[in-house]
Image 1 (cartoon, rainbow, N blue to C red):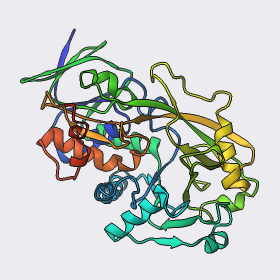
Image 2 (cartoon, helix red, strand yellow):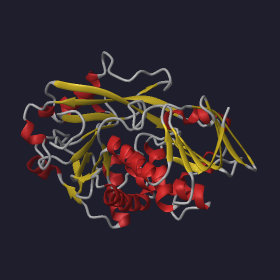
Image 3 (tube, rainbow, N blue to C red):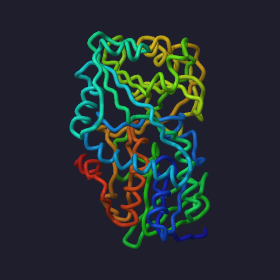
Image 4 (tube, rainbow, N blue to C red):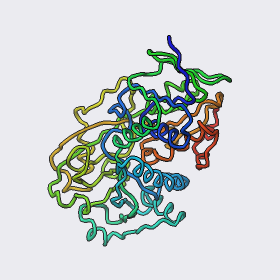
Length: 389
């Protein structure tokens, strides 16, 4: 079996992997980079399917993410300048719920802590400014003008194209059978050959737990449903009339989690209509066994929540699609060096909220692989917090 040699191998060219390949060729142009992907680049089997992802600065999940997001916005602009592709679109972001829910209280806390421009909208003003929403009488709104959406498939394809133009080698439909590391570097074996390198970056998304089995990471892969509807009153839900949005469902009416969605717009590269989904872990699954596409019953939970909170949006169904969440035990990302192999860097467990960070996580992973360290504040995302490695 032939052997080829590189400086850095990136295993998994999805969201984070494609961005890592781009950032490696952008910042470290002398490095010979190989990216290996088991499906298409981009593809419909990974976590980046669905046409749009929310981006926001006031991060309720953890205030420490905000510094990473500031850099992410800078890198999204760098991607636009280098590629000519507009993958980030600012629409504003509106998040609704009771004042003590994580979505609203956490967003306010992050905005105040980091001095981010924002508005807190009282219930009496919500009906006037955003009549699309039906929320409890004690709900309030958090509005952030700097929020918007990112186009995931276009982003992955654009990062891959720039990496290729900068000299990287990317192989699709070439899954890794095994990898190994020692003091002399790393080796990855596929059906097509053996590849050796000084460094390895593992960005395998839903397949991370299988490739990193020695770490016994408690990652849970879930199947997530995305739905598109044609609103009863389309004019209320178009770009300009509606920002990106999220509604905390609390635990009332048999619901929980966050119902979220996007405005309709003519430039959407995805399905027509209004996209809505539930941000909560879906059905656990094995990514090798789970088939993409809709099943009977997929529509009902989304339609039910939408009918209660944005009733004029719940018109005829246009499309159902699926993607994966790879959930870490605490819902936060895992980014670190392998505890036994300094030549191996890993990133996984993005738990359904990682795509907005793609441009900065790719840079941090490129730094770790090529330079041994990164100035970006990723320490709170390392493996030590699980106290097992």
